[in-house]
Length: 453
Ligand code: TRP
Image (cartoon, rainbow, N blue to C red; front, side):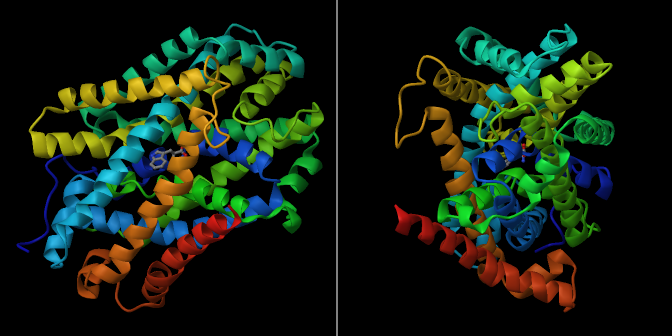
């Protein structure tokens, strides 16, 4: 190889910019909307413990592998995998890994945009003071009025997707860095404020116990699969999003340290969101397993009761929309970069194409909450099925293959060169995790679930 490659799509301005962008990708609806409700549906403490274990022993090593592959390949995941495989004298079919990621990205973005649309809708509902003095029945009613109206959902889905594609069309580096630098800390502070409210007014201890007191009788293979899927989803792993962000990473940045920073902040935000939500759930007699509407039914009660709630509530939903926005961008980026590289399209054209496909797919999610809500496949609605297929199957399979590639297919010399690690303990630990623990862990979880079915 004639010196390190550079990316035709540009590079982050610094190592910090990468950490911010990757954190922007990781922290999103997955932490604040999904983590609380899947925790609620899967029994609490034990699920959380398994989730954190998955982040540490599968998530962090896989993230390092993804960033490493991205930075070495410097292209869209499809071309990166193909190029690296060729360099290692392996089959170009590794490019399929990139393709699977592109498909997963479309599928996830299609429902992600609909849910982000709910958050957008809530900005205006909160700002208008709708939730002043709200009760649990009232917030449940408001939520149900929203999701049973396809027109409203389509309108918000469309607006959010256009916002996303505008940023993607302009190139991810522009704007994203600044957005994340200010908005992420803002979101964090507001979450802490909510935890403060939950401590003062909610059933705080009950919430803490629910989140951190493991009841292992609730653990089934299905619960473990959900926890693993949630770890992949929340860390943005397994579909090439982190790989393509890694492809814009400057050469001198430490991949290990940046990956820890990203995974650490992502997990912290999820746990804090849980601490803010469950005390309110218990205080107002809501069901922890209420499903995807959980935060939309609980947080507005808190905003309705606290002084200045309309203000803080509006700010919260605005920041949630931004968090979702910086995540959504990374879901579209691998496909857009590929269209630019291989089809010679402009970013604008590529973004329009990807946006249109995603928009259409998103209608399936919209309808699954109203006119299609009675249709079930494998006992799941269209939205549930998409969510299950992507988080619990496609992302772990992607992570499995990434680990195999980084741990077994690539020559160790190439790996070490790119990671810029010598034979330290850290390096050997990473290599062990990526070669054995990640692939075996994912495979075991799958086998267990299949056996149960
Ligand atoms: N991690 C984001 C969240 O928690 C969602 C996301 C962005 C994602 N890019 C991804 C999930 C890539 C899986 C793969 O909201």
